[in-house]
Length: 640
Image 1 (cartoon, rainbow, N blue to C red):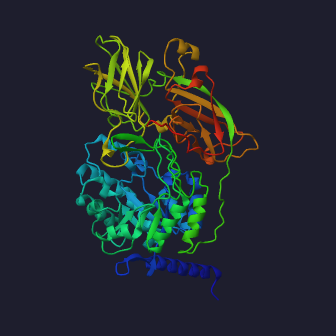
Image 2: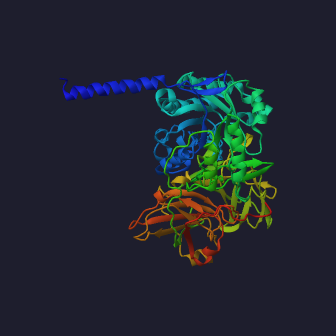
């Protein structure tokens, strides 16, 4: 009789051997004869949903992924964002909301395969298209075979790819395909050395049997510059585009292989000052049905959009106009910003059920929401006390861009002394302002100039010996097209009348994400009345509030409503919720994940950086409410 312990060991070894064997036998391939994917030898196609791990707290990942699977989707599609993982050169972060291996594991637990987009460039309406901002400190030619750029890409891939390899499908993980670059054909260059080099680096690290793919818009010029050997070519298109026509364009450049729409748009992105973008459910389901009937694979961009917390929302530059994007990335998705399912979700699920088995999974369609307030805000610091001596400073003959200072985001104060007798008033001109500037002479506010409004000239009254202060806000780096190489701040000459101003001092923080967590001790120099009597501006101002949830109220999702403020950004318990600008819309409220709130009896801290004059500052009675419903479809200006 075999002892029980030996039997257990024997069974364990057998199970381990069978598991290992199963992993070894796992294959995800392309059949170029039948033009399909093969999963373990069987024809396969995927219906994926885009969900970016960096746009939701990690505590919510399982909920969002489960809802993807419950809708009938069999795959998840996500970017890897280099800029978040390497916020400073050589410093890497894969913890918490950036723990990609945990994300892959949770996707596999939800029975989802993974379509992975590793870039290095992403776009995704993120600051600098997901590239690390510090690349702009160097004379680098982005998205090219430039030696400097590729040196940093290879260093990054040497860190990233070993983390990905264990999660490939062939190794027992969920990752079935890997995208290199993104919509490169639209970038306007045909650097095949660059894209081929990316392919070879990834193949060398992950194996040549891993399916790599590219994604581009369905036009001949773009595909001509984007399609490379040993990669699957895919396209992206939304409603109103006939699958047979756009896939016909693809077939002119790649005669075989599975047909894939890597970005099918059930919604669209939003920008400050422009109406909230929506797509009708009937249009989405009609065109989805046509794509699936064409036997193509498809990925919804986005299925769950989430939020660009902090300073991570980017900007577009179109027809000579700078257009910064809002904090919300709701995208009119089938799941809204708080992860609730919508009518669009149910309708899409019904279409998918015609082509794929839909698992019976019980989900909570809507998260709990709470409302409370008002929370009183007290003035803690006003201009110029906000820019304290504990911050970094640098002097230079000419104004320096954010990146050359080492400033990632937020604000930079540019200061100089006028050493000549000017006319009164004199015209202050900034040739290249990026993006918005608040002007002060001897601490008295003169007004603002803004790139988005194409207003870069302002008359000011100054005298010899006056101190000119310019507070510049970075509203988000451009994330698409050739303009992604732009620096932030004042880039070029600042003139007062005919004279170019020199000898600037810069005061800044390296990263405004750390504004609260680094514990800067900011205090108003005197009472509110004393500051006003001196004629000094109150803004930019720091406002703080403390609140405790009621004993019978559990922390849950909520929406901060800054409608009695003007423009700025907000921190809750050290987490930056993002930018607000209710006067411009379409977004009013900022999404607050319940996991970032502290329950009774703990105190919650709210810190607001208000950039512009707002009525409540005049009487010191600023406050903020928290709502249980979002407002991201508010009226917008009619003259933008």
